Image 1 (cartoon, rainbow, N blue to C red):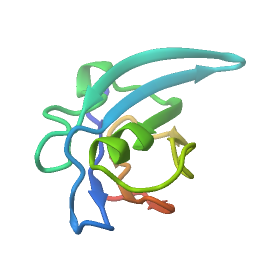
Image 2: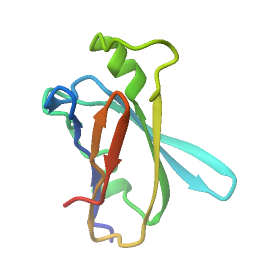
Image 3: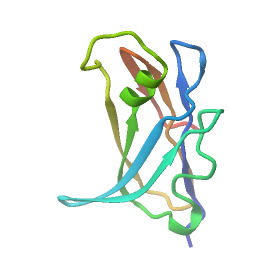
Length: 119
């Protein structure tokens, strides 16, 4: 039985604040198909209110998170010409342990981002 789960935390490194109101989509990848699992929005702490993939739905496989950075940056009033350098940031990753907590944070600025497997 799966006991793992998936979370994220988005920080706006240009402002030094959590990225509130950033839309995130999760897709499960199966061969050439891509199935949307859920769509969520970050809260005041830059996290989602519940796990993106809770224990009941957690399973091994390949996934892709789409972080809608461009919409977030536009809402923040970031001054840059269209199209923005960063718009939708895809992060593709694998889950191979149904008992682990997978945490995929995003450090975001208008011209760069970074991620890692957190805890």
